[in-house]
Length: 134
Length: 135
Image 1 (cartoon, rainbow over the protein chains, first blue to last red):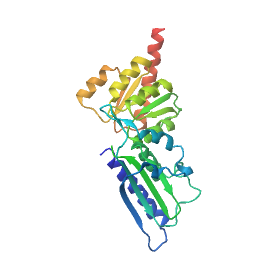
Image 2: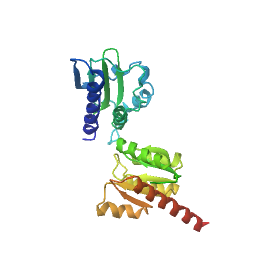
Image 3: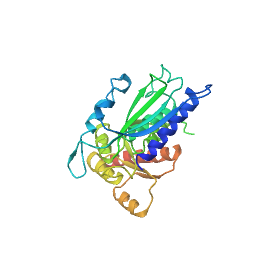
Image 4: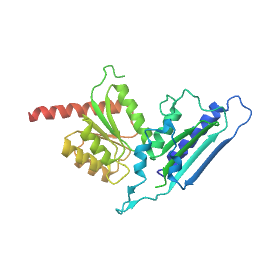
């Protein structure tokens, strides 16, 4: 529940953005939503400038102490993907620093579940949020 | 509503980040300075030490091992910063525990800007008076 509610709101906000902005005026388009297990942590360490700053603190999270005192290295990591093939995220917009309430909610909630956001604008808009299941 | 801008440094402890965002916005519009937002009891204690708040607004139900009551107790004892609880929780057991930490206020959610303003002002004033008496 602690993760499910924020995730639900995140999906809602991102899908609303797709519908409101990237498809406005278009006749058709596709929105893709998925939740996957991440097998490899390093796949998300992309050299994307926008994600810089969050990387350092999260890396340490990969190794954390379990309640029983054991160091857990292999926690299950999940990735939420919300993607569309619309006209793409505006280039001038920096998603972490925006007055858009929807995106503020997304970054705030991702923070709450200790997740990391990666935005890929190469085709449409592609948000990936990775987080630990526990 | 509030004619004069309020003054004071407030630390917000709240684990629901959106709620924290809202509280921060309210405090800023009232004129207060938000010294930080903590989302766990441990975080609250460390931010109470490092950001020098005049008042701590404390949620009781927090994620992690330390709840708001325990965090408040430690903050009072170690740094002598007054605590105002801000919580949806109003059952008697919690209230009893909260009372023992000698809070300067207890706000029940949902609340509005005026509730925040009056509770913080009362807490600040009472704290100043208590300090004066000691001197």
